[in-house]
Image (cartoon, rainbow, N blue to C red; front, side, top):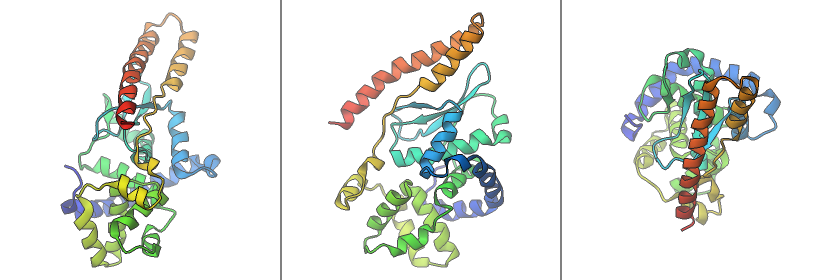
Length: 269
């Protein structure tokens, strides 16, 4: 089931149960991030995904954030849906990285493993890991209360922009801190707005915030995986499996070129 306002307390309880495991995984990941420390947090994540031959394709599905695809030769690749708003893509970067770097988790899946909207423990670990990578080195709670705005949604929009995080990720993190701080008023506000869709484009524009963050990037990028496959074919020209892999990727590219064009036309009116 999806995370709703009714499930916020259960979500926070799950976070407490997995906190130690997630902290250990963050410590492991941070060793890999040393060479990219000068980059913004979302670009650090992007560099890790590129190490795994990241595939970026626009998929017109509001509930689908990404996947880990296993090819017939057992090569594992991350896929990001670039038809999602950029803020959500950045969150999915870290969600994917958790699954990519958690061997025990990956070994339990023989087929493709897709990011799900289901509330299960593995997904909660990946989501909590993603939120801690985004918010962990900064105090969202203090920042929220430092904002000189009276309107709750305006303050949330500024948090989304500053932390480059999606709406519900901001609210869940705020709710967790509010609960620890016994801030019942903030908890009530978060529950009041949690399930309500918002016109973020209007709010961002009214506040002169960068509204490209709440728009899709619609990037189509299959270059890294095509290069990797072609390099392998050059070494093993007689192996049909690699030719089959290349054919699959080329079919994706042809299909999503059309999808990308359609989505851009729709976005631009």
